[in-house]
Image (cartoon, rainbow, N blue to C red; front, top):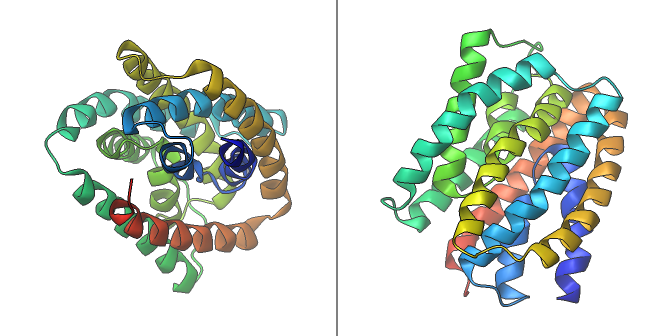
Length: 242
């Protein structure tokens, strides 16, 4: 349990700095704290509400939150998440995790080695469509929104800071509804999740500061390299002993 608590801070740093990192917490709760898979996912979802609020507030305070763009993404993500949750029970978990690994690592590698592209802003219909795809995929794989949103937006040429800030916002409705669903099944340890949330929230605040210092192409490359690393982790995750 001490190891899980210590892990919460770097997880929060990753979430605040590059938008992803929360995918490390559920396996840690399963393997190190002895929680079953559903309790680990539910407790993590409650924890990520803390990081989402801290991250959204921090980027908003420094006028780095793309409210309109994030709102369009959320508009598409919220209803699509319900459909993804329904399909979740049909597709084998190993297939879902391997798909997520391919998207994450592939996008990171593409962004690392492709020629730099001019920053672009997605039109409103495209933003809603991307949000719907991310919401569906996030519910389907049982992950938070940024895990899919960051690689997709970076691959589409959206600036890294805009991508990471929007990831903070879009995760709020996704993990909020996920927490309600897990709580209805009694699969949320609110005490443990709150402690983890406070620690991870502190890490998220630090991560947002790091992201604002790594402007432009440097932040883009750091986020892309992290995607490759997380994708490699996701490749082996389904085959690790529980």
